[in-house]
Image (cartoon, rainbow, N blue to C red; front, side):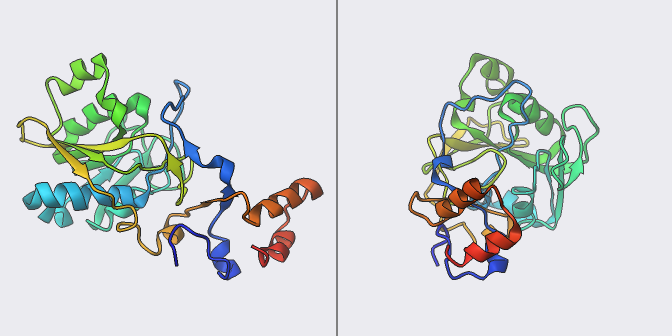
Length: 267
């Protein structure tokens, strides 16, 4: 089965786990505007987290990578666990927290509260707080920090003067394919015009930043059960029968479970 296509023969128990959204919700454009006080919650696709392990740490720092299994990994902006659950694939000791209670991990303000000791910090922080998150992470991580950011994060005089000039990352790992991220959910077949990269700081390595590229790996690093584990949803093409279901709800002003189940066989 194609990982990014809904299975029309899937039983109701499976379809209950996959939300199918109208196709008009598909793309997050490169100019993404967020209020100053926004939590900026854009869940990380699981494959994008695996990419930093498989195509950055394993290839370019194999010694460090080999010790990950005995390291404590910390995600201080965990949301609903999209990154932290992948971290558990590489180490049994993972700490997860977030300033907001998304129902996963501890509720903790990473910037002002007490934080646990950690060997590594992996995170996809709010864009507006990215600089502060990186500074705090670098001050507590024993071995390294890996941060998923929009590529445009590397621009700007303030970030240059406060971070990159005196504390440049060890690696800047650019995704050559786009990493679709959507507000509040993981859309498995999503699209985006925004470019992303991993910035990695290795403790004690002060060599000039090494520019590396993460090859196309979305299909390779997407596991067959990710859509169940992470509650992934699909954007439906305009001709998908789900639009008929949506029209029905709007017309009848009802979205009862009985009606949904009665119509599900037509999806």
